[in-house]
Length: 253
Ligand SMILES: NC(=O)c1ccc[n+]([C@@H]2O[C@H](COP(=O)([O-])OP(=O)(O)OC[C@H]3O[C@@H](n4cnc5c(N)ncnc54)[C@H](OP(=O)(O)O)[C@@H]3O)[C@@H](O)[C@H]2O)c1
Image 1: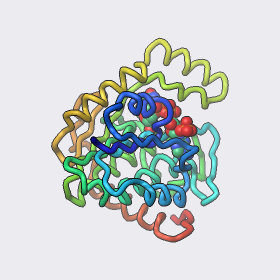
Image 2 (image 1 turned 30 degrees about the horizontal axis):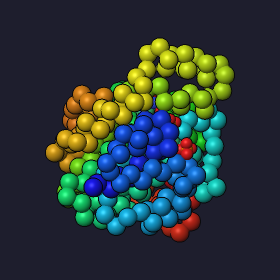
Image 3 (image 1 turned 135 degrees about the vertical axis):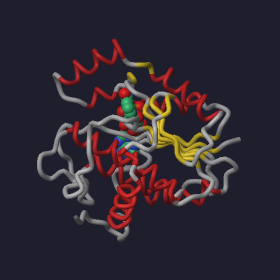
Image 4 (image 1 turned 45 degrees about the vertical axis):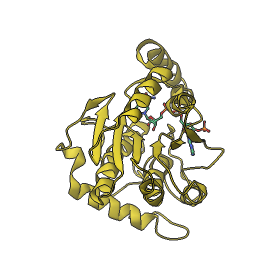
């Protein structure tokens, strides 16, 4: 029986995936289990997870129309979407390496999308925060997390997966009128969480064999695109290692 850890496993795509993996030992993490926008709580979660993990699914996410700063001093989107995913993957590396065919499945906005960039001199978006920019910075950073993780070698396969538009209810976090517009668009055009989760079950049954794979709803994305430049991944990894190094990390740029 596989041990599958799913952050964001209480709702949306992660929740639908958790309920479809009945034959596995699924550990579904929601914000009541650990606030993953906190480095301290992310570290504590990693400590209490099993010593052997077959699959780590990174699916926790939240939209913030206003710039929210965590108690540890980080912009919340960056903390949840980037810092915690970096930290969990690295902290759980030994547990994953004990599994036969370990996989990290990172649900993100990968996929040759030109939108979004890393604001290297303003990672916390202190000047001019916008939700879209914060989310897309997170998507670009997650592309680099995959590259940075895979660069260390080892048996763990890292899969960046963009589910595209899924009617997960994420729009409920938005204020009006964005909430009504996004909700209506999701009802009309988005895939159901059940269908999206079904694709992931199939993927996890026969995962890619390469150290790093990027997929847009199952379609491969070329890794020689600029979003995946190794030098940028090294730069981000160095920054994240620095930001998460201390006992009570504070943003330094
Ligand atoms: N939906 C889409 O169209 C779409 C498209 C592209 C990429 N994605 C990516 O796919 C992933 C899942 O999206 P979704 O639409 O399924 O999301 P969702 O329905 O909004 O679910 C979000 C999940 O994240 C958890 N979460 C939120 N804040 C947290 C925190 N501070 N600490 C721990 N857990 C937290 C929630 O837990 P609680 O319920 O317990 O708070 C919930 O389980 C996200 O990473 C998103 O970026 C989604």
